[in-house]
Amino acid sequence: REGGRAQNSSVSHAVRNDLRTGRSMTSETVAEVGSKRPRDEEISLATGKCNYRLLHTLRGHTAGVASVKFSPKGDLLATASADSTVQLWRWEDGSHVHTFEGHQAGINDVAWSADAQFLASASDDMTIRLWDVTEQKAVNTFAGHTNYVMCLNFNHKGNMLASGSFDETVKLWEVKSGHCINTLPAHSDPVTAVHFNKDSTLVVSSSYDGLCRVWNSSNGMCLRTIIRDDNPPVSFVRFSPNGLYILVCTLDNNIRLWKYDKNECAKTYTGHTNKQYCSFAAFCKSKDTDTVKHQYVVSGSEDCGVYIWDIDKKHKAQVLEGRQSSSSKGDGHCDAVVAIDCHPHKQVLASGALKKDCTVKIWIDDGSTSTTEGS
Image 1 (cartoon, rainbow, N blue to C red):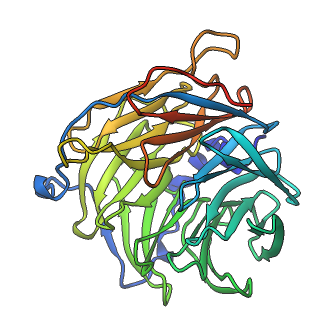
Image 2 (tube, helix red, strand yellow):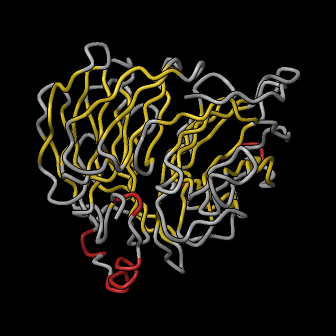
């Protein structure tokens, strides 16, 4: 077993037929896939192609890489692994900065505070650890979940942390004290992702139970539940940068963009493989072209590739192909890619793959064609 993020969801499939939807609060709205679509101008952006190429391969983890996250300032990259460590890198030159150690089991996710002072990590040891990046030490441990901690996210002020667990709950924590301020009986299967919207008034969660739920972060009220008729397990969810949409990954090889407040599925992205693992997805923008920015959706794939879609047209703008083995020709990964993140300011991607690979790759779209291998 390679950590909760790499856990096969077959057990969850068996129990999903008995969803305990009675947990839902009376104020929530259940959203089905509708025939209506948002006006195209709400999300329409210019169409373009990508030209990402490998910049560095970062080697340091000894087990599968579960999460990669650029710092808010964009100078550092944090990576988390089933080897129970969080590693810190300078992505531009591929140099290793520090290894944070202390968890007693694999790590499933890592998150930055908005000021980049702290990192938080979610582990199979059922705890969350808070790390001071400058002092390079652990400063607190958040205990309270009763099963693997799968996911976490800071609010925009950095004073609150949301976490999701295999214990089927979402917890909200006060960062300064480490106290749990609210426990949400969120789902009837493991929680796979949590994410604050841009002003942190809402938290969205996803689960193997096939549901996404939007919560009021102040009082814990469930405001909306989104579900498809066929109810596939949801492996990941996050708000769009403008907060108007949620990006939803499901274990049926689909990624969908939802206008959640109107109960509308706006776009569907296909072509990758996602049937077994909880893979991240992200939004990224292209470089300026006549003052217009193309926007894309990026995700890893169980075929060892990284897929980039035009957010509006839905076509694949680029596929960073995987390899059959580490000795095969090519620059891509050689195991399922579950970790992905986009640089906050530049046309740079980071990807991480599971145990047959164990590497992090930095990809850049700068118009160049040369490749540099990192240490």
